[in-house]
Length: 148
Image (cartoon, rainbow, N blue to C red; front, side, top):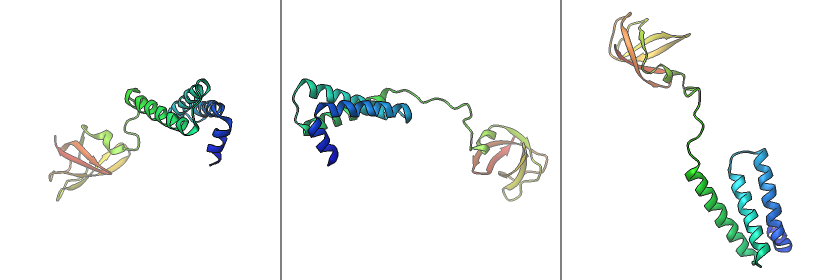
């Protein structure tokens, strides 16, 4: 209620100050949302300076402007930045498509395979040690293979 009382008592300038504060916060906490909220507050303040608007209607104008501007921004902002390390924290997925040689046979559908510095559990058809396999999928630390 203190915010409503503050805006009711200071009128349009409270929106302008709030808009500037939100824009300044966007510099400290980048994310894109605060800039649209700040812009909506500034436009609401400008409208309230030009035309006498009762304070509940000012909140409605601010809410509509904020929702529309954020909605348009989300719709048209384009794709995010592509990662140069798409398999970070998905170590097993980076092996999909690679071929390797089994260190141990696959028996009853389960075997082991050494890749880089790790011995991985593999799942696939029963194959002898030394068989060449292709990694077709990964499920956590389990690599799924087929005969290559």
